[in-house]
Image (cartoon, rainbow, N blue to C red; front, side):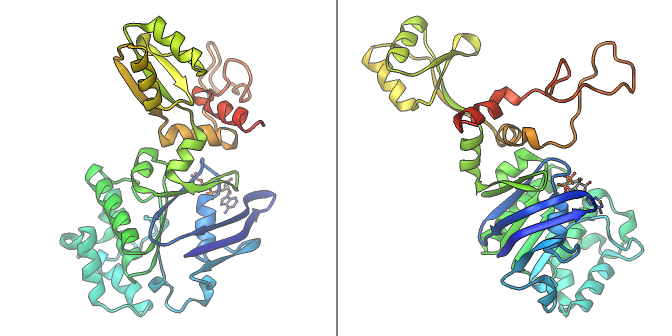
Length: 338
Ligand SMILES: Nc1ncnc2c1ncn2[C@@H]1O[C@H](COP(=O)(O)OP(=O)(O)OP(=O)(O)O)[C@@H](O)[C@H]1O
């Protein structure tokens, strides 16, 4: 278990991490999300004792990182896969780590096998591809057989087979009762891997909840219906008190309704349905809805006729305004009355 209490980090004037309090629990994969510059890497570095907090504490199974004897046996991490002594072979890189952390030599061959690098164990890592470097970093994280694992962008540079492999690896580690904390910008992958999410923006905690709850809270869910008796169905649904909006291809969308109840309503009025499908946003859409205001670095479409290098208009103003994806951030704010 990892417990953060009021964790804060200033870099000069910059408040990179702002009073973060949350707990990463064992037995599930916890995803760590936030826009670029939100403070994820800084938080992870402080969790590993690599950066000193300006305030607050981190406890690893109840202890501060510096109190851990042979820390690789408690917590394994992949932070910067390129931070490897490139002149050493993969085997020697891992052997040095094992020897300096009291880990038996036999473990080196085991983790090389786990990550699929046995055949290149004798090669210098400076010749490794991005994906091989990533696998070597993961091997180092697994070396001490730790109860807690932390991965910063682990699928960077991995091909689809590699992405599939790391997804199953993380799920398997969590199923063994380990604590798995992982950051990624790849939302589709995170949606398949994580059970729980911690989301930060501009250093502050925005959400700490299950994947299903996060999507339900931060996006619009509705039922799409389609019928050859379009107008009659619309009248029946409206009369039942459900607001209706036009959808694509002659369908319409009913907010806040249950698909089964709508199907029964149509059946009672002997109306044929061609479609009755509950719709829910993806994790990516929910994430963008929640973090729209916490995004630090925006891309702006080039204004027609703008000279190269001309500064873009401010976010939220004029033709260069950043679109709120499907207005979901607004929907949420309206629901919450803010
Ligand atoms: N050593 C440093 N000195 C000064 N500012 C820093 C330093 N490290 C990070 N920052 C700033 O702190 C903020 C948080 O950075 P951090 O790298 O933790 O964000 P992140 O969420 O990991 O971003 P990304 O998704 O882009 O990797 C950023 O504004 C960054 O510029």
